[in-house]
Amino acid sequence: MAKLKSLIIGKVKDKASICKASLFYSFSSKSVRYIHLALLKSTPHTSHKPPDSNYISDVVSYSNGRHAPVAFAAVMWRLQVTKNAFVAIKSLIVFHILIKSSRYKFEGLDRGRNSLKLNDFSDKSSNLTIELSPWILWYGRYLDSLSWILKVVGSFPNLTDSSKEKSKEKDCVSSYQTGYIMRQTDSLLTFLEHICTRPDTPLLFQNKIVDEIRDLVIQDYFTVVILVMIRLQVLNERLTKPEPVGDSSLNDLRLVLMRLEECKESLRGFFWRYRRLAEDFWCLVETLKADMVHSDKEMVNLTGLVQTTVKDDEEMVELASSVQTEWVTFDDSEIAMSELLKRESEWETFDD
Image (cartoon, rainbow, N blue to C red):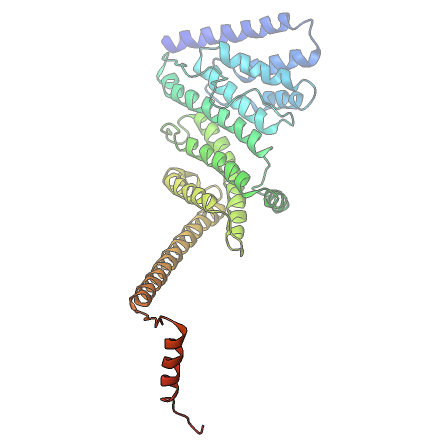
């Protein structure tokens, strides 16, 4: 009876929302009205499935034109007014797809400022909504981090299947200064670290909405892996040049490699999607770590050699200072001359 009651209430709310939007936006442009109606139909209260892809496509199609700000504003409004877990998490999925698919550079989220207002979200109306609530909190922060990545990197290219795009990205990164590359890498790594904080994942197919979120996150994960990989390759090339990067950059790189190693176990569950790419990435990380260890050993040996040389030099100085040199002095010129004549008679000559 409780489930039936919830279903009936959900259907009534969905119908009421659609009728209200149709009336409210009746005097707006056709595009604005369609954006809101498509959004409402893709995020109903009743369905326990992911948003309908057809309605999402409608919202995305309008987000690539002059009505893009309206599409993003509509999704954010939907998120901020709802108290229903199904509506909230579906709206986040639509928002996620909008961020990645739209040509419009959305800048509505500021890092760490809780722009989506989801920090206190909680829905305890059923076991499923209780399971979804921590995912909503995490997913909101995830999209906040994703929005920040777009600002740092400039775009979110589809690099998993395009070698041409990878080459273009590497050429672009190679033109950056080392410090800027390190800052970008740090932001990308922070994104990966947030993925590691995701809630416990239910068994596959038990929660189709969470399965949809996981698929979207896996796609983002491998794109970010490629972005990090390209930057590590550029840094590695600079390390092998006659004039390597500075000590501060080397220390920053060590910290990056340590943080990546801490993420590896938590991210292992994503390897199956692009196993070869995952293996290449972690192989590069291990190679860089080995190079850093080898570099540290060489530095220790060089330091020991310098200390030994300095010690030898100090011993030579001590030995030289221990030799006493005696100076002969004369009271006047006559004594000096007589002494010289006296010594001259004692000189010996040699044929050769």
